[in-house]
Image (cartoon, rainbow, N blue to C red; front, top):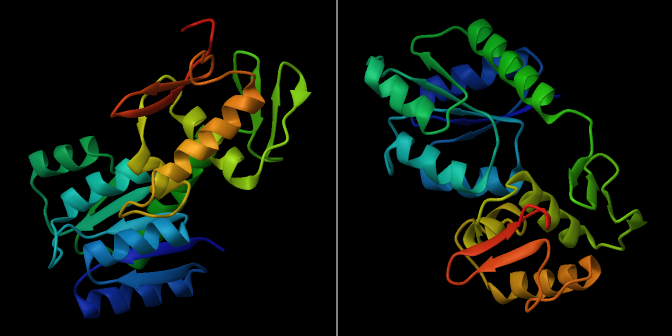
Length: 228
């Protein structure tokens, strides 16, 4: 069963969308404010988000940008705004699809299925390999130079998230939201401790990094030592 988070401030529309998607086999979680929805989406990790742009507390486009900073969840924007430039801005901001109101439950259901097919095709089943590091997302097993690493759940999640952003500096705020489910920040010392543990298991140190490169005041990135 697909879990859909619907962010819509109009109570009647939210009820109709919830009813229509539920009848088509989805589990629906509704929210009528943007900031309230952000925390729930990060914490509950739905399969897809249906997002209205006209929210009472924050513009939906800004919420989309905030969501994209902490999550890769597929987002379908469903709104009355039909201006071409608005559509382009929204897709460029990270939306996976855009549907203009009014729309039927059948159309929304079809778009959800299409987006999820693309996402699952992109995910693939192949392990991620970066230098001598291999991460298998399905089995949640990591190995370095052919040797299995003894990782805690958080250590694997942290390494997996960094691998998904290979070669990019990832902020500690993003890591707190994506790995520790704290979208509004938290103790960055937690990240530092886990990074220290990971470095030890990767055979490196902060002074002599190989895979994990810290950028002072910005964040950390995972790299192939050969590329670095």
